[in-house]
Length: 112
Image (tube, rainbow, N blue to C red; front, side, top):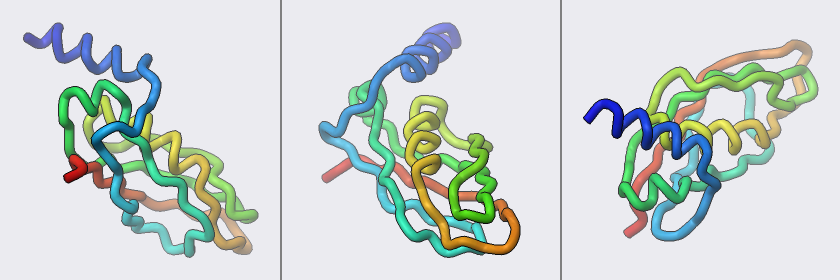
């Protein structure tokens, strides 16, 4: 049973992304800077087939220019993690005098 879960997680990392049937809601952030542009996360095909829902927490470091310098998953289902990382790396924040960091939550729910 455990091997099956690990295999599914590995396959999810290797799988591409698709839009059919599921969507990611707008992410909710705990970072102090305003977001200028957001890219919505897209469910991986494996997550769609498994009908997964949940929240992925991503820690981000934003440079002074407003681009995401670093992003790493700190919580959430491994099948959904790469979709959240791919999306948040494309976000743009308001410029600031120094870099800042915080947590961004991506809430994934089945599309009704």
